[in-house]
Structures are given as structure tokens and as C-alpha cells.
Length: 96
Length: 481
Ligand SMILES: [Zn+2]
Image (cartoon, rainbow over all chains, first blue to last red; front, top):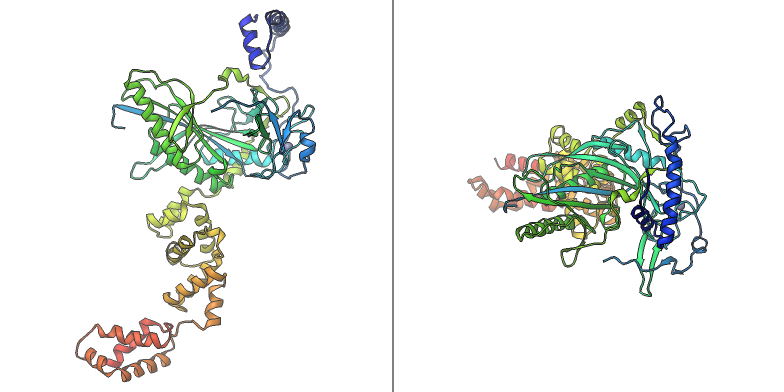
């Protein structure tokens, strides 16, 4: 399994990363080497095991529906670059 | 349609669950208020935080799944749906992926559009996810983000493919019935105008009898039942026109403009594989044992449909009355509660859908905002049943209850309005009226039947309407006979 340059470009776009050609090539190499490592797992015989989504044997870790105090507005906004009237401000999202 | 085309409509409905706290943190839920005041490191997506699912939300979805005749899987996990948008602080939305992984799958809801045969609409899945924040466009430039809504438990209910719904009327009926069921279950407040219930239909048309379905468009920004129906009607018409002109229908998401009544193309974000769904490692899988599922099933409240049937069958109410009393949750609860106080169902129904409805209508009040309680109506009906008051007095004390909240029996006692059924008193009054009205009395004796109305009226007048009119008439006939 190997990843094409177009796939790297596509994944970069989904991650909102702007990469130049040199960076794309570099990431292609690194991602391919990661995929190669994953490929090694294919050699392990897992015939006896049933598929599972989690490594820990926990189920139904749930909490009661009881409210607790969250953050003050000023504290919630403290890490934001731009704020206005209690809102986080981000570059305009174009949507009709 | 009448144009050689048929439509197919799939419905995707998002429901904000009526929990006190969010899905994965214990921030309170709510509508409106100061922005970013119901937030914490978990729902703001700060690094190093761990989400814990809301037990109540999970139970509400199991309940809904069962009420929609769905299968509930033994194992169900949460997935991450990855995309970047400022209203999504973590860079992913926790949701549920897969055919048989959602808390409910493969069920159905029966709808009965007016004047048509009942129809089962197949449900593909009922799953649990979290809501996003809200983007607010600011005049100064830039978009403001409020995360109060981010992480509120959101249930998604999706109909199956191929679609059972084939026109806008059925789509609206599906939504009406689904919302009513959810209100009976108590899992949401169902307020479309506040976004607690959001509907995104997908619509396609194809020539009648065509083997394959047409390309579908998804419609957003429908904020009322009316918009849902109008939006689908418009979209069906637009697609037919495109096909008639020999143009292709594009697969796209379109928005509904409520003032121009026109749909317009919206930018779409990603295709499904771009969401890179994977099981959320931070959230332990859910397991539903057969016992848990059965316990929830046993606790399911009566459905609107079952209650309608019961009112007709056991209480002998008409289709119309049963419909009125079950199709609005406030009325249904009010009637049930008053009925529980052991009064005659038919009388109760009449006083509720008659004078009570009229007063509410005139005042523009919803029943829950008025001073009337089920006890007021039960109290009133009990006095009518026992003959303690006649319907004229009943009207007056009901109005008094509506105005001041006074208990009807209290008004009757304090104002001395109880009906006079005392025989001796009625005999005296009738004799007095005959003596004072020799002319009419003579006319009656000579066969002019209708004069009895005048004579009885004189007795009623003298007693301010409190005499038992049936008894007065009987006595009048005896004395004149
Ligand atoms: Zn929170």
C-alpha cells in the first residue's frame, strides 16, 4: 500500500494545510513509511480474535445528568486571538 | 404530481434532547442567553480533556428507537466525524457511523395523511451525536462564535432508502407524527422555531415508472412545518422543470429562503469519505443487554396513536374529539390528568374542546399559560354530573375560574349558585308564576304548547337561572294540566 501525491494533496486540504511541492513530496515519503509500519501488522495471525474498536475492556462509562459550573465567559475567551461582545471572532465564513 | 413524474423524499431529522446537561460534559443546556456562558474545557475542545456521555441522553435515544420499532444493537460505539469548521471546536463531531451500530436501526413510523390509507415510513437509523456551536455574522467583519450549543445532545432520525415518502404532504405528516411521538416520549421540547427540531429532507424526482431514482438534492434552513412542505413542493417543481428542459439535476445542498420562497445552492463541505469516520478512542463502547432494552420498552409511555384508539374504543369519543385531544401534547396531558380524577369523559371532552377552547382562543393563551388546571375542569364536570349546577351556571363559574383561578365548587358555594332542585320551593314558584300570568296560562290550557317556554322562563328568571329547568317544566305541566 502506498500513498499518491494527489492523496497527500487531498488530505492536506482536508487538514487545511497549505503545502508546497517540496513539502508534499516530503510528506509522501513520511506517510508511506508510516503505512509501511502499519503493514507489518498484517503479518500477525488474528484469526481467533473478534474485531473490536477499543483496547480497554470498559463499557457504559456514563455520567448522571446533573449540571456543574463551567467556565466564566472571560475565562473561556481568554485564549482567543480576537473576541467581541462575548464571542470568539474568526475570519468571515462565506456562506450564502 | 400529475405531470408524468413521481417524487421521492428522504427525511433527516435532528432533535435536541431535553436533558439538563450536554452530551459529553455537564455544562447546562438552554436556549439563548449570553454567549459562551455554558461552556467548559470539554465542550470547547481543549487538549487533555476527557468526555463522559450523558446517561439520560443515551436512555432517551433507546426509548425513541423502541417507540419507532427499531432494533437496538448489543454493542454501539461513538465515532468521530472529522471536518474543520469554526462552529466545531474539536475539529470533529462525535456521532455514530455504520448500518447496525447506531442505538436504533431498521424501524418504522406509521403515518395517516388526511383522507389516505395509513402508510409505514421505514426508519433507517436513530443515532446519538452532539450539536455544533452557532456562527453569528458581525457587522464589524469576521464571524462570531458562540459555543453554548456546542455539545448539546442531538438525536438524528433518518428514513430508509428506497424512500416511502412520495410527496410534500406525506413529508409534512411524517414530521408532524414524529414530533408528536417525541413530545409524548418527553425527549425534546420540539420547538422548530428555536431549532430544537430541524428537518433536512432530500428530494428527487423521476419519470413515472422509471426503474432508478433521480439525483437528489438536500434542503436546509426549513424552520417550520409550513416551510418543510413549501420547500419540498418548490424543489420537486424545480427538478421537474430542469428535466423537462433536458438539464441534469445536480447533487447538491440547497438552502430555503423563507421570504422569497425559493431554494438556492449552498456550498457543501465534504463528501462522506472525507469525514474519515473512526471509533472515538476517548469514549467507551455502550452495551445494551436484553434486560435493559426490555426495561425501557416496558416503561414506554402510551403512543399518540394508541391513545387515539383507546379514546375512541374505551371512552366512546368521536374520531374528531379523540383527534383534538391527542394531537397536541398540552391538551393530551390536560385531558388525561382531569380524566384521572374520575369524571365523565364525554362531558369533560365537551367542556374542554368547547367553552375552554373558546376562552383560550379569545385570549390568545395556551392552556399551560392560563390559570386553568385539570382540577378546575374535573371539579366543574363533577358538579354538572351530579346535577349540582346546570350548564348556564357552569359556563359562568368556568369563566370565573379562567379569570381568577377560583375553584368552580368554591365559586358555587360563595355565590350561592347551586341548582335548586328542592321540590317544595319549585312547587311554590310555579304556582306564583301561574297566578301572576293568567293570560299565558290560559293560552297553554287551550292547547298553545309553546307558551310553556315563556312560563318556565319566568321561574328561571326569578331564581337567577338556578332552578332545575327539567323539574320546573314538569311541575308547570302538572299544575296547568
Ligand atoms: Zn462543557
